Image (cartoon, rainbow, N blue to C red; front, side):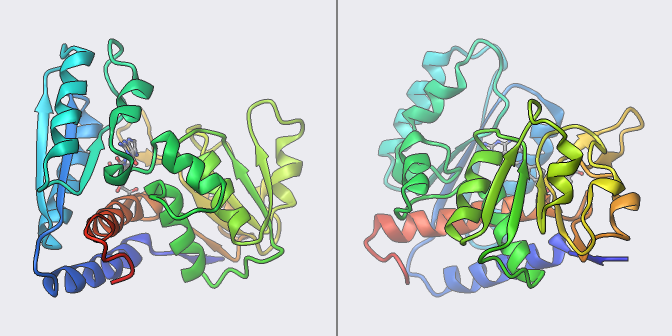
Length: 283
Ligand SMILES: Nc1nc2c(c(=O)[nH]1)N[C@@H](CN(C=O)c1ccc(C(=O)N[C@@H](CCC(=O)O)C(=O)O)cc1)CN2
């Protein structure tokens, strides 16, 4: 049985470290989370972000807009937050209702306040190895890999999934850490064989238990980004945990793996953005 990587504990330590750094600052970094509509899962995530931010000493608030809100109203709100000096980080919770174009909204956020790291400027910085804000979930995965003692340079890493918010930035971060990276996706031929070659496997496809035990190479580190809610209300990852764990050297559970790291890294990004806006980067 592989070691279970405790994302909850790693996230708690990261948040404690951020709280200590914030307590030593002469100001409180400001975070604004925008929720549009009543998606219940988004409600949980937004509440958890707000609570975690407040507990760590951020000046945090959630702004709720109705489900039938116009795109132009959301863009105006983003513009107000862009110019508000008390706001260091802006996050628009996804998914958005269908009348709102996600790309338009993300592109309207000031890249210096884009604590989700989704703005094309930040995506471009990541792709060209320049400093910028990095998407929270892949950043959290990198923390977990370090925690699991992964030796990254030269390691064969397979990223399953090519989404803008997880798969692509994940591959960039692994490449920047000198892994040999393969991106696999729904059109990849022989997905099980590609996965089996991985020394590090990151599954981020949003398909419950897609990755079976025999897709896992002996001794691989397996990171499950999937958060799928079953008909019984229970959360299931993209990896069939009970089958995969005996073959893996280390594996993240769902829940309690990557999810908590997403929130901790949002706080880390908000502190980074606050310091950078004041010319204090690295403090
Ligand atoms: N603007 C954004 N929207 C969304 C993001 C994002 O990074 N930015 N990611 C996901 C949702 N998400 C954060 O917003 C998120 C998902 C899950 C968790 C988490 O802690 N999960 C727990 C289980 C919680 C539960 O019981 O439901 C876990 O895995 O242990 C945190 C954040 C989509 N939208």
